[in-house]
Amino acid sequence: MGRKKIKRATGKRRIGGSDFHFGDEVRYIQLRAAERDGRWVEVRSLVLFSTETGDAWVLDPEEHLAARVARDGDPEDLYFEETETQFSIGWKGKYRIEGDAFVYIDDNAGRVITILGYPVRRIAAFGQGLRG
Image 1 (cartoon, one colour):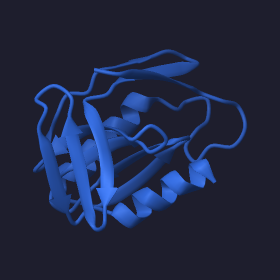
Image 2 (spheres, one colour):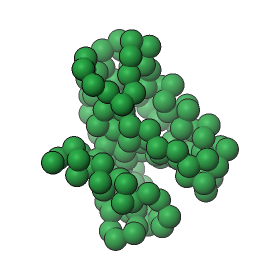
Image 3 (cartoon, rainbow, N blue to C red):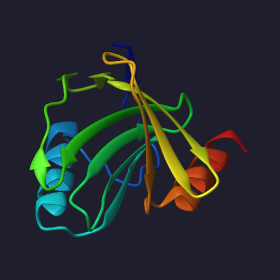
C-alpha cells in the first residue's frame, strides 16, 4: 500500500482555508455516493468524485494512484493520517484511462477492474492540467 504525503500549501486552493480537513471531504463524497449523486471535488492535486451508481473514489492524477471510498452506495475504509499541515493517504491501487474506460488495478488483490460511465475525460483533463 503506497503512501504519498500531501502538503497543504498557503496560496490558491480549490478547497481550503484554515478549517479544511481531508477526512471531511472523504465523508462528504461518501455521502454523495450514498445519495447516488454525482459530484466532483478538487483538493489541490487530488480529485474526489462520486457517481450516480453509488461509487466514490479519491485519485491522485499525477501518480495515477486510486482508492475507492464507496461502492454501490456503501462506504469503504480509507487509511489516512492528517495533521494541521499535511495528510498522508494509504492508496489501495493504481488507475489508468483507456478510451472511455476507467481501469483500476488493485494492489492487494492484484485484480484489474474495468468500469464504464465514470467521468474519464474530466479525470484525464485534470491530470493533464497538473502536468501542463
